[in-house]
Image (cartoon, rainbow, N blue to C red; front, side, top):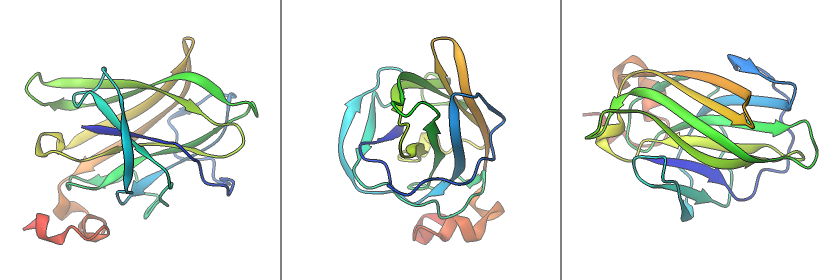
Length: 177
């Protein structure tokens, strides 16, 4: 499993504030959606994840869809673009991803540390890298700092056939047969 954190956020502001189950006043904007995998520039340790690391990226990919219904296809990613109300941003934010049981330990949660910028959106997303990650059902991403829940957003991971256009959007058609 690979969680992803941006190194450099996009310079254009997010105007949408929607799609969160909960969102605190510490978050100025939030957008959820599906992405195609960006090139990685490295990884960082994330001991609270099954893979033990997260991808680092330089260029933030656009959402290819604002959908929170995600096809279970290797390479597809989904996540959150959020921006803090405080222009100095929020450090030491814990992201927890909750999902159906996966992997050899049947893990249902994974977590890692990140920051949320206050001048440009910060992207955090989950990308399907391994077959064992393709578990269908409800998934949730939650951001927390010092005991305060900053946001909670739900996704529904479905069979590729349940969202065929979205399953093909990143060019992974050969994985669908």
